[in-house]
Amino acid sequence: MAVGQARARKGEVKAMAGAAGPLIYCQDLVKIYPLSGVEIPALRGVSLHIGAGEMVAIMGASGSGKSTLLNILGCMDEQTGGRYLLDGVEVSTLPEQERAALRNRKLGFVFQRYNLLARASALENVQLPLYYAGESGPAVRQKALEALQIVGLAEFAHHRPNQLSGGQQQRVAIARAVVGKPLVILADEPTGALDTQNSAEVMEIFQQLNRRQGVTVIIVTHEPEVAAYCRRKIIMRDGLIVSDE
Image 1: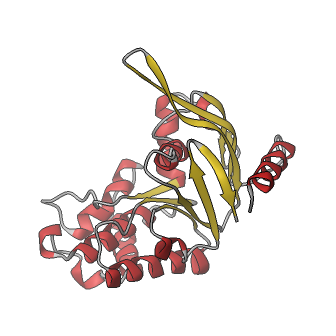
Image 2: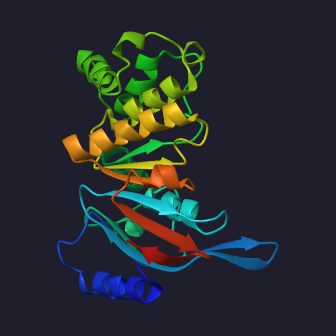
Image 3: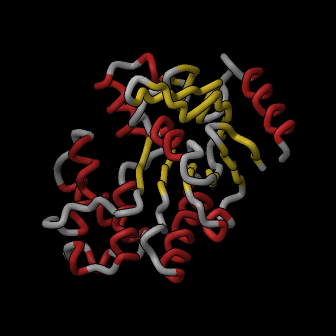
């Protein structure tokens, strides 16, 4: 889609304001970072909507704003201006505690470097989001085992991260992201530390979660091979969306 078409989509998003709307709704997002008395714009007015069940790649060079956008979508950072609604809730109006609760209920995260607790087993790592959500009892263990089964690692439940390959660690991270049955999985360069075969296996898991369970998946990547797994590709440059197709 050309820049003019991307602007047309922006107008379409405006028209949807106040309606039941998409799962993710962004309107004119601006993010400015102050640095030594100078304002550095990371986002310059980003508008987009993402419907339930989409699988989307966000691409762009370093400094294009893609990770900043993902952090805002993940309720880990706040925009300087504009609107962001997640499942109909305007995130910026929420106190931090409510925003954290929304993040825990609706979102799952997968990072490039796995972020697993080194001294905890795969099972214990996957259980963590459930404990943070206030769950307890035998159901926590069962849900974590089911999540490990989804990524093909149930037999490795009691292995620690240093006993697993990089690809297996990332699959544990995916299990941790999905154990709470989030509406959206946000993945930041999830294959960046993996070889070609493990990257393909990880992306196939994301596809299965999207197609079989209807989970919305948003992946930030600079790799065209990874983006090819997604049905929609958004390209960013200098804090703006320049293509959405």
